[in-house]
Amino acid sequence: MSDKSSATDPLSKEERSKRMAAVRSTGNKSTELIVEKKLVEYGITDWTKHPKGLLGNPDFYFPDARLVLFVDGCFWHACPRCNRNVPRTREDYWRKKIDNNRRRDNRTHRKLRTEGYHVYRVWEHSLKKDIWVKRLSTVLRQLS
Image (tube, rainbow, N blue to C red):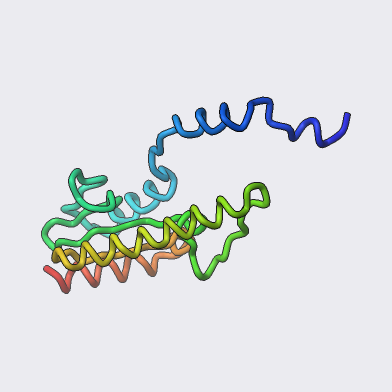
């Protein structure tokens, strides 16, 4: 049996597209759980997870400080440090998709700032150390 036959998609391009379009995001639970655990560990309170009605669907919101927190996956949001490889299959599609995510993030950031919100972004790779949560704690103290 050749490798080529095992890599062939049994669905047509249209069927695959329809099936993938039906998949809805549920957020990146593993990174959000890490952030939530660290917020609790550092005694950071008075936040809401996935607040309704805020532009960009932030992962966490601190209403007293009017601060929104986004946890960005390095691949999906084009982390400049990690520079993750783009899949070779449909490379143009993936490059456009990731670039559009980055552009949308920038527009959302600017719009939130003009509406008086403070925007704090944490890269997925930053979660390995506690520097991000210490900085966030300092920012929250300064804004309160």
